[in-house]
Image (cartoon, rainbow, N blue to C red; front, top):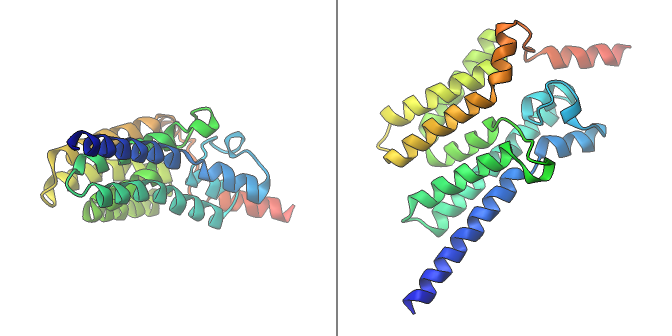
Length: 217
């Protein structure tokens, strides 16, 4: 009887992990860009199928929709894990990590995905609401000051682990996860960092200006 219960629990965990990856892998920006403009977003702008590039190329609401849906891809698996396994915090951590990795390396686009910012935000909003809110504030401030989403994203990846360690009594495993994911997201921003150093990184409003110019032509 105990063996059957254990087998059932393991099966449920595995199914949840697989679901987390498949949901995280849904290429939101790619699908929205195809639907709205009939384009492959990977062939335009920075080539990244994330919310920032969709915002620049497709439009404001397409970018916002991409961000929100990508965030839900991380939020939902963590909430499900907390619901089905309330005593096993590590299951939520694993599902969150898998959803983020799914977004970064999606099976639907030959393992070429986004940078993981929005999906990570959804994961940590479920696990660490206050640190995530503070990281989001730092993101907004940086974008307002420098006009570049990449700077805001990198700043948030630094602020979030610091807040996780010093605000609230979070398990060590969560703090380590936040640090590792933050480092991974920053690593995914290496091309942006290179463009920043070369002063070639696009600003937040550049896409809106380009769309306005095209509309007036």
